[in-house]
Each structure stands twice: as structure tokens, then as C-alpha cells.
Amino acid sequence: MSKVFFEQLHIDEVTKQMLLGVIEKKQKWERLKKRVLSLQIVTLGGFAVFFVYVLFYLIFPSGTLTAFIKMFLEKTVHLYILLLLFTLYWAILYYKKKCDKAEEEFHSLRCEIIQKSADLWKEEQQWKERHKLFEIMKKEYDINLYFENS
Image 1 (cartoon, one colour):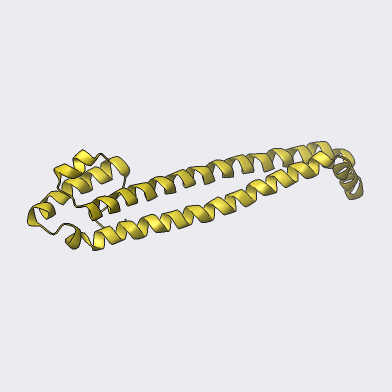
Image 2 (image 1 turned 60 degrees about the horizontal axis):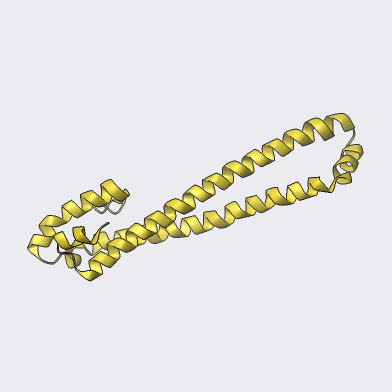
């Protein structure tokens, strides 16, 4: 959001910083959501491919459990693949936790702006003009500053 827009609406520095902060937190949350989704897709695909490989190239040809275990452990690459897949799974959990925290920070700052609207737009002219800012925030950044629970 450009500073020119803030100047047109006569927004004070505190409000400006809060709005820039909520935009930044929303963008961080969106980046983390994309990272989690891409890790989930890669990990699920990796587990599926590895499962199909183990099924058709190890389980069916081996016939018995001991033969399967022997065939599986003969190649260390199988263990490396498992290690990689479980590392990807751990990364999903790690980034999911960061994503949840970023979402919580975003929503708390957004709610703080909504709750303090009367303090942030003190003058009557500012209060009447704030809907323009709210519309731009909704349209450009998909940030709803009208209601807390949306």
C-alpha cells in the first residue's frame, strides 16, 4: 500500500504502522500456508510412490515377511528414502506450527485494529473516510477490517 494513499486519508503514524503490520502478517501467513501445502503434496506423493515400489518390487516378489525384510534391508537406499520422507513429514509439522502462529498473530492484530477503530480514527472526517481504506484493504489484501469474526 502506498504512502500516498495513507496521506490522502490523513492517517496518523500509529494507524499506518498497524495497517502495514497487518498486511505483513497476512503475507507471512499466506507464504507459510503455501509452503505447508507444497510440502504436504510432495510428502504424500513420495510416500505413495515409495509404497507402490515396496509393494510391487519387494513384497510381491519376496513372498514371506523375512524375505521382504531381507530384501528391504539389503539396499541402504530404502532407509535413506524413509529418512527423507519422515524428514519431510517433520518439516510439515514444523511449518504447520509456524503457520498457525502466523495466523493467530494476523487475526489478533486485525481484531485489535477493529476494536480500536474509534481511537485510531478520532476525527469525524477520518471516521467517515475509513470505509474507503477498509474497502481497499479487503480488495487488495483480502483483509476484512469490518468485523472480527470473518
